[in-house]
Image (cartoon, rainbow, N blue to C red; front, side):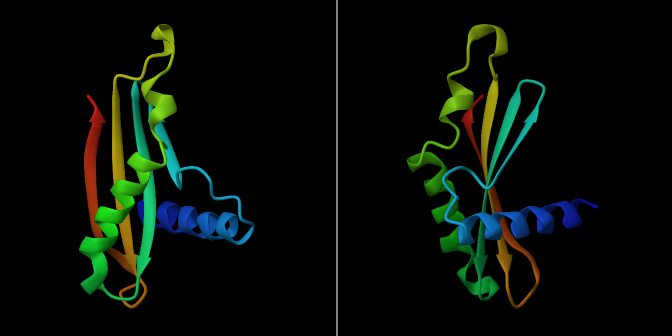
Length: 105
């Protein structure tokens, strides 16, 4: 079930890219007082996964995708924010790498 959700999210991301609307994180999951900010990357094979994972985390930080969740008003304060990179392999047709980094905890 989770794999279907992830692939559906990737599909929607590519639609946004094609329409030149991709100016935010690929996906954000809000769960109680936690925010999970996802960035997806696609590589030709698993060999390029490490570089793509690093680039995805860097993109979340540099573009400020998580900033609005770290600066909410006190009554709606998010207590933990995580940047999550998911790398998909074209050849493998699956997740080939991932990394999670706490931005606020």
